Amino acid sequence: MQTKFQSRPVIGVTLDSEEAGGYADYPWYALRQNYMDSLAELGAVPLALPHHAALADEYLALCDAIVVTGGAFDVPPELFNEQQTSDQVRLKPARTEFEKAIVKGAMQRNMPLLGICGGQQLLAVLTGGTLYQHIPDALPDALEHSTTVDTENAGGKKRARHPIEIVEGSLLSRCVDRDNYVVNSSHHQAVKSVGPGCIINAYAPDGVIEGIECEGYDFCLGVQWHPEYQQHAQDTQLLTAFVVAASRYQQSMRSAGKAMTEAMNDVIGRSGDGPA
Image (cartoon, rainbow, N blue to C red; front, side, top):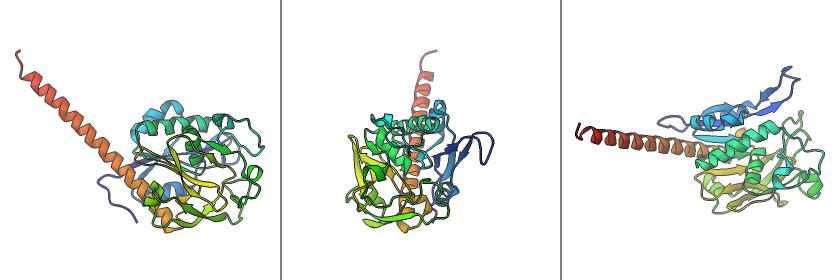
């Protein structure tokens, strides 16, 4: 159900990328349509963000919120002071450099930020956390968190699912109307620890961290599952809360701009009243 806004908030959505081959014989961007469709259905204007780190400030000036998506990539272990220990780690340096700039810029502006799957992991690392590089290696008794090595393409297989428990009093708990429900699961890495100012807001039954959020921000949250599929009412509730936060940011920026314009006009008016 679409929320009625005075003006639709613009939400920047990061893209995945692939090298030449398959779709095109040049490098290409990729993203599932449901990332965009789910936001548009809920009243936002989704805007795809190509990987140009030098343009991060210009992109942010166009946006009222940011979604850092998942995809077929991993966060470089060097970002959390580890050597790569798993041959399952897949790096995309240009994507990571761009998303680092976008996440840091959004947080500096207190712009609403939602990290999904790999986006949640990047948020954790950029705020001082660490990751398990490959869940089966680090946690051999863990639940199945992905049915395939390729976490983005299940190849026709049914995706993994498991319950989560949401931490009472968290922002996430205020976004959804249940403290436990079953989510989709398609990840081979997971957050191991969170940094200062970041808290855990959801766990899987095996103890794997399924959600995080940063304190002191209007909306800075990451989840390990994919709410864009909207498989449950709670997925839609979470995305709706995010879009509402984006609208709130949009209105606050417009109010600040209006106040600044009025102040400047007042200064100009008073200077015009002075002696010639």
